[in-house]
Amino acid sequence: MSLIQVSNLTFAYEGSYDNIFEDVSFQIDTDWKLGFTGRNGRGKTTFLKLLMGEYEYQGKISASVDFEYFPFPVDEAKTAVEIAFELNPFCGLWELEKELFRLNMSEDVLTRPFFSLSYGERTKILLAVLFLKENAFLLIDEPTNHLDREARETVGRYLNGKKGFILVSHDRTLLNDCTDHTMAINKTDIQIQKGNFSSWFENKRRQDEFELHENEKLKKDIRRLTESSRQAGKWADDVEATKIGKKSHVRGQLVANRDYIGEKSRRMQQRRKNLEKRQEKAMEEKKSLLKNVEEAERLKLMPESFYADRMAEFKNVYFGYSQESNPGKKAEPVSFSLFQGERLALEGGNGCGKSSILKLLLKEGERKNGGKFFAEEKELWHSGEIAVASGLKISYVPQSAEFLRGSLRDFAREWSLDETLFLAMLRKLDLSRDQFEKGMENYSQGQKKKVLLAKSLCEKAHVYVWDEPLNYVDIFTRMQLEDMILEYSPTMIFVEHDRAFADKIATKKITL
Image (cartoon, rainbow, N blue to C red; front, top):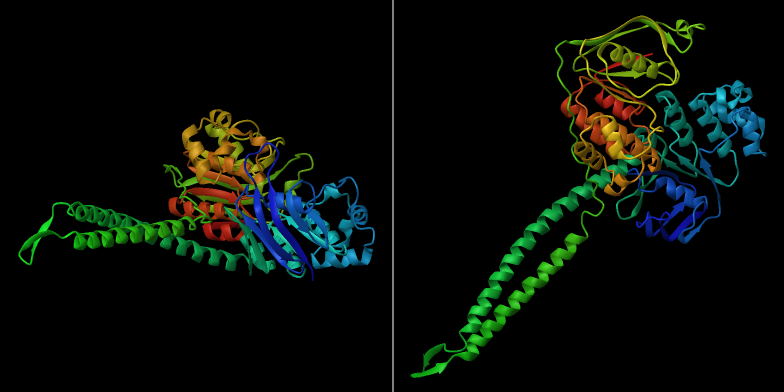
């Protein structure tokens, strides 16, 4: 066991006026299985890069272990075993095969070109190679994006059998399955707690509720103390004004009762000062509250009702990207109907055709009803019947957001969005106003995905077609979207491997 010590860390990107980290200090045990969470854009990946020594910073980071970052670029033309031995020359083949067995993978993947492997196979091989390196502390940055549910569960079980890593993930199920400590980047600090994500989130929920309650209590106290102080001051001033000219009978003579009035005035003034001190103390206490409360604003959706109950139908549909090779015929044909009010989840392993079904639906919708969707590079072939109701309006969130470039305002004009509503929706999704002036090519992956989500939320549609909408999106936003969908009950057909999200919102599931 050893420690990673972070002392007085301060960092800002060149040209930025805001610090990503400011004078933060903490320590990490190298035996921990540490889950790392926080809103998009808070600096999770940046912190991992700082540990790797890729940026200059103020403060000190000391560690007696070597840091290894996942994911990393590889020569995809080489075989998996060649890449493995380049990354770890001291790794024995038998050791690698043993790790792959733990990851439910056969040995034959090692001799295949890396580019021919699925995302899940690539992820598993690279994780296996890194964990075989001695004295390595792994920095695992969102390993499950694009992985199907089964692959995520396999990776979770594998990581649970390891130790000595930081795992950045927005998948609540994965974090709960394989972490024993949680590090969170809050609005004003970094917090580390023992326990998995659920235990951290419950502690945070209770702390937020306590602070919100205390804040309301202090607001009432401050109003009461302000009024009492004002009244006490008025009384003291009124009493002070009677010192001159105020007379009373004592022993038959008219004398000025200045001593009595002066003492009464002094007590009134002291009471006012005491009230002002209590007021200042309450205001100072109030300043310390709510700094890290995450305000996930209520989202709105504008689904439109439809005249027909059945909105779309697939009957005995085969599909593929090459009519000549006819790959779709190797599988069973796809048949299902989408009815108004349903939220249909397409499930299955990577490569089984979930995204292709969504694209076929969009293609038929565009052919029959018009509409504008994000262009696809490949031409899908299909046979069988795909029916889309006349007049059906579809809102689409594609799987990838890599293509986003330019300004938000140009994007809003291109897609005929209400700019004010669009920007307000992005603010509710926790995109800061200073991001509005930047080109989208400079956004993080999570921020780009929020642009596509905000577009969809601004569109009045009959059906919402979402293809892995949560890739790179932070946990708080995922919960916002869940609450919104359950409130507005839109008709949806979607692909999503986040088990917590899919299980919560789906009304029907189809496994391919």
